[in-house]
Amino acid sequence: MNSVPAQDHPQPQSLTDLFVSFTLLALQGFGGVLAVVQRELVEKKRWMTREEFIEDWAVAQIMPGPNVVNLSMMIGARSFGLKGAMAALAGMLTVPLIIVLLLALVYAQFADHPGVAGALRGMGAVAAGLIAATGLKLFGALLKNVLGLRICIAFGVLCFAAIALLRWPLAYVLFGLGSVACVVAYQKLKP
Amino acid sequence: MTEPITLVFTLQDWFTLFVHYLTLSLLSIGGAISTAPDMHRFLVDQQHWLTDAQFNASIAIAQAAPGPNVLFVALLGWNVGLNAGGVPSGLLGVLLALMGILIPSTVLTYAAAQWGHRNRDLRAVRAFKQGMAPIVVALLIATGWILASANGTSLKDWPVWLVTAATALIVWRTRTHLLWLLGAGALLGWYGLI
Image 1 (cartoon, one colour):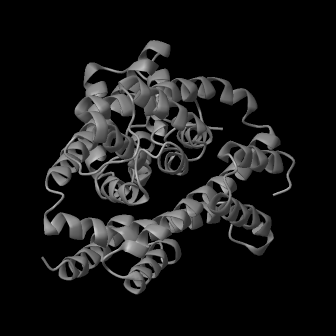
Image 2 (tube, rainbow over the protein chains, first blue to last red):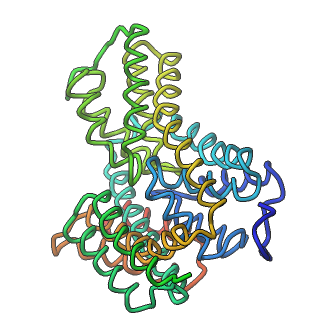
């Protein structure tokens, strides 16, 4: 988007670039694409900063719909508006959809093999680590947060406890804890 | 083993399927997977369009395949369609289920994102971004925790937790390609080491 001030990081070249990039991202994303999006788009291609990634991810979480789909659409829209959103979305879904249908066709033959179940379990454990690491890496972005590091950590600990330990529904935590955090931030952002 | 299902689908049934997914789309805060319990209620218990085994396999395959997990919705539609005839109706099922779950939420998200972008200097929009940041970061770590505990929480499952923790450390601290790690996890699991 041209109106964004002082954007010195690289941009996707074209709609094709967006489509191909998101197809490649999706194809690397076994057990979740988010970790790959962060690694590729923030660290390697530098299409967005850590802060921008967190902002988009916050919106992707709070809106209905698959988070990664929402996220890819928003990233596509950053550079090419609606067309970019569609290109990113199509990239994220088209080839993976074909693969998942093909997998469903062959799955029946191998579902009973104990190695397959084990391999899925192993990949699940790794995928869990990938997501957690994405959170750890984004932690650095909180240093610049207006809330200050201590309040950030307090909200983070509460959120982790509510979701991971108490298993409260995500919507309650997002809207409950989220609105408190937003009000505090609003207070701190004195005009 | 449950009996396979053979269905005769009318236009009305396809419409019902589509509308059900349109509704679920608006409720899918936190991702499509959060509406999976309701999909089970609707497809398996209420309509008897899918068997339990088909439902579970759809989710497992989508998790194992590359790409966004929302594709389990496509597989559910595919299996409903297969039960209702064959490959052509399977493809129709894919199309209706996926369009249904995606259209309302993507339109809403796109509108919200554009609005937020146009008004990014508003104090309220900046407060939203700053306030949500610590919660979003903690959510990611919590998601890793929940996924890891899905593999088992008893003491004998310590190797799984070790793999998860080691992965988190490696990814956080090094630039190892993620596919190597997934491959290593698959190998460890294949040989029953974790």
